[in-house]
Image (cartoon, rainbow, N blue to C red):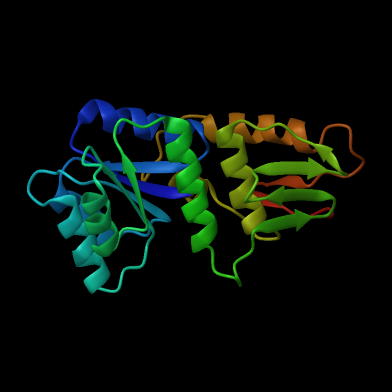
Length: 226
């Protein structure tokens, strides 16, 4: 999932961004309410994590503005204010969930994943399959021929994007923007390294490869030779 964290405490924001990425999610950060509102208005996110007390524009105003504009992205409000009245105000402002500080990251992650499941439209796929390779987006479980495959968070995101576009060529630029969140080419072999690692995990030991290199173009996941 792609998450926007609107949090003015730099240490907390950095921790959340780092932890979310380690959990397999993409995370952007905004340090004040106005910047967060603009980012939420101009980009597509699966979840918004909004601190209630923010400079320039408070969190509840950010959420109210988005809801008034028709933005239905699920919102998890974070706040040190934990009274019933405070939680009710947060939910009535348009928040979908409310978590009081201090909190355990495992609980925050569980709430994010619950909001993500709730937000997936019925027609949107939650399971990708190419041949005998299966990726379950809800459980983050990957199997081939019924055998589990252990992937690192970045490898999982790479495979998820490739399987989402199965049968189509995925370019380096597409991977940089959608898996690494880079809007420029850092001129490194990071993609080649991760593709090589992913290929060794999903293809090694099987008769037919599923991850193909399309010379001069990019990569493709498909069941069958190119």
